[in-house]
Amino acid sequence: MASLNMQFSSQGTARDVLVKINADQFERLAATFGFFNPEFLKSLQRAEKDIKQGRTRKIKSLKDLRS
Image 1 (cartoon, rainbow, N blue to C red):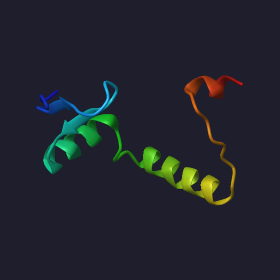
Image 2 (image 1 turned 180 degrees about the vertical axis):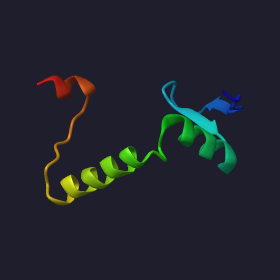
Image 3 (image 1 turned 45 degrees about the vertical axis):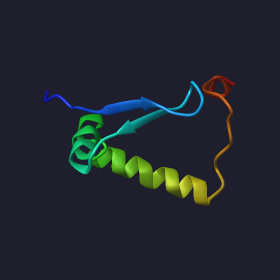
Image 4 (image 1 turned 120 degrees about the horizontal axis):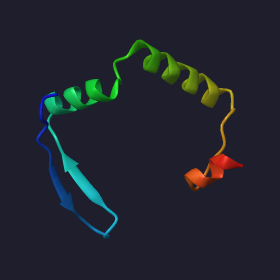
């Protein structure tokens, strides 16, 4: 796996992080996460369809998904 140099900096509150990468680095990162995988792209299309049909709910925390 090729290395990926990124620049991190903290701004605003202690919970804010700024990550700076260029377009080429972003494409490598996206490929690593599988964002160009056909199955992932199909899942995005299904998610958009669900949103348009109102089959979503707002959550404040990932813990809300357990219920």
